[in-house]
Each structure stands twice: as C-alpha cells, then as structure tokens.
Length: 201
Image (cartoon, rainbow, N blue to C red; front, side, top):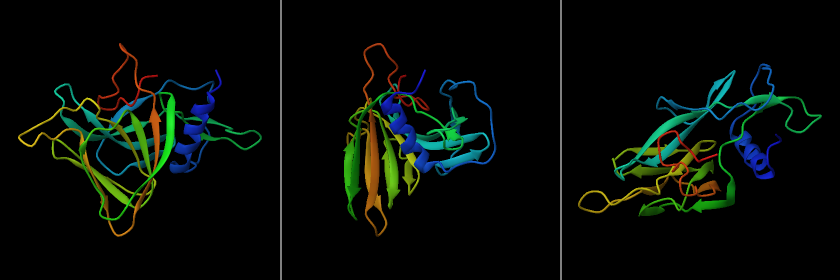
C-alpha cells in the first residue's frame, strides 16, 4: 500500500532531521512501526545502519503524572522516495496528520503548567527549549531534535496543582519549532499517552 499524502509529508519532514545513512538494505515493503525504549541521550540519529531515530517523549501515566523518556523509531525502509532519485532510508510515523504549524518561542518565554492540546511531534529547527514534567524531570532539546508530546492525560499533582508540563525557552536566541499534530484517538483506541507509544495507527 502506498503511503498517504499526509504520511509522505510527515516522512519528508522527519527526513530533514534524520540525515542520509550509508549502506543498502533490501525491503519488500514497509515494515510495521517499531518503537522501543532507548537509553537517555540526545535525540537525533541513534544508529546509522539500520537507522534508528531517537526522540524525546513527554507522556502521562495512568495516575496522571507526566514523565519524559527517550524512544527509537526503527521502521525505516531503503528505497527511492522520489524516483528516479537513488534509494535512501524512509520511515513514516504512526497516526494521521491533523495540522502542521510553526512556532517561535521568544527569548525568556515561559509557558506555565499545561498539557499538549493533543498528540504532536515537535521538531526543533533552531534555538533551544525545554519541558519539565510533573515528576521534576527536564527534557531539553535543540536543532534537529524531535519530541513527541502526549501528556493530555496529565492531572493536577501536588499542592500547587501542576499538570502536564512547563515549557521554557533556553539561551540567547528565539526557539523555532515545527509542530506536526496527529489526529486524536477515537474512543477505544490506544490513548497515545504511554511511554514509547506515539499515536494510534
């Protein structure tokens, strides 16, 4: 089955942050999405052959607490993305695209405690920024790094009622982001709020 138009758009966006890799691997069709927990470490290309794209995850657990961790996308196939161009590694994230937007966090920006409006990929184009989860963990990212926000299930925690995450711009330059929002899951589908569970297929 050929990828959808929106799937191709997201794949192209993700290829921009996952540089080309050396080596040739045969593929008879797109493999199923594979998402595995990864050790802590900066997001980006974790392995080259076969490639694994490391990304940060902000999620809410069953008790409504938010956490961060790293996961790897490993469902790449080696093929021509736009024949007759030579083959390259191409992967398509799960979920259907609902919207694509740009965001600029001005220097000194602080977004008080809130949850993401829905499941979304955030790709940092320039500058740096961070999110703090209700468990106190801070995930900071910079250019070329990818984050998946799925903390919509976070509920108020502690005496100050923290929920979701706190966003901060970091450094002396504004932060430029590309945000790819996924369609929200339907009742009965996966919530998209677990660790290494980006969005339902």
